[in-house]
Length: 269
Image (tube, rainbow, N blue to C red; front, top):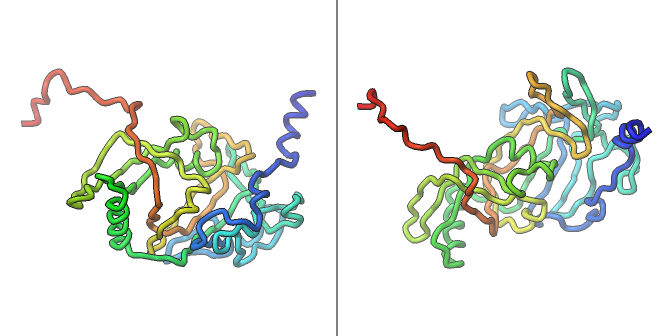
């Protein structure tokens, strides 16, 4: 029946467009991405994505190079063979799904490193210098993006809100001439893609841990109404700041502003 075919279709091999990029440059030559699944903590922070064996009993390797000097070397794989992954490298993960355990193809602990490192102060100075060279009046620093938008951008592309835009929670605008900073509201930015990381000017020398639950692109995980924890536990060790060569910042016209009260608050005075 159609229902049976659709159900078993979830387990059929999927075409992966990333496979065509094997042994090719996919990000900046300064960047390297490693899988470090057995690492238990980083700088004293526990890594929830750490594991010793995956859901299929494959022993996790201490260190695997996924991208070296910007070139894609291997992808995450399980026991289901694929053209560019004939054997498992231990990434069939246990995940939460509606009060029960499920499995999906997902990372465990991933670390991004860079050859070019700078302090936050140096990155900010370089940012203003680049804006001056382009005759811009302003440049921007994004310090926080809404969590749901990050989850959507990590793999579920069709769910990115507002036609592919993310919504920064904190956005600092810097006047190029004076260096004066001010917080701005009602802005949106395009979701960074893989090719966005081809033109990274520099990253910060300080790294931080980001623990989260993520969904595989082809997995069917649904949150229950009273249980919002779903997905595979993953940990990312990333530079605290990235300096992109170019990133658009636009006004967000969809924001609804709260009207002023009809009568002022009598307790305010």
